[in-house]
Length: 174
Image 1 (cartoon, rainbow, N blue to C red):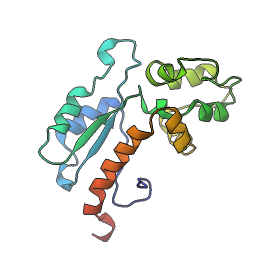
Image 2 (cartoon, rainbow, N blue to C red):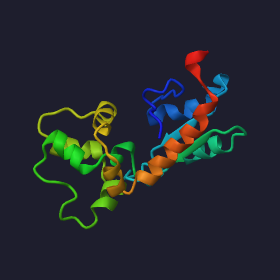
Image 3 (cartoon, rainbow, N blue to C red):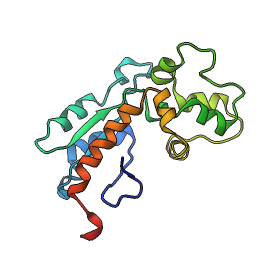
């Protein structure tokens, strides 16, 4: 749909949850006068219910802005839950595949499992960090993986919104 890594009209900023409030409240990108697309983890896998959907107030604030800014909340717990179990298995050489023999694997994988914790508990001797591992492993995702995870249409909507904004701006020529 759009190559957000190589398109000079797209600026991707990856932030952790603790700084999101400041970005929303202080509108650091407002002076650029460009639309913003925010994607927030739902954190529906958090044991403490207060930490689930904790970004909803910021999502609502962004979506009420008079310009075209838009914020999405993931249907899965975190971005890492969009990685297919086969990709993680292949990278970390787990003995079993998470989703084989488990009728509820998709619900569990999407809503309850903490992928970082799961990998750390099952991996061999390879390091897993949320930021670098997700970036590396996501390169192996295919459309078929996302369809099996029931995530393709959701992610497609994010990229379509970004693409909708892009034709209006060209930073490389300015």
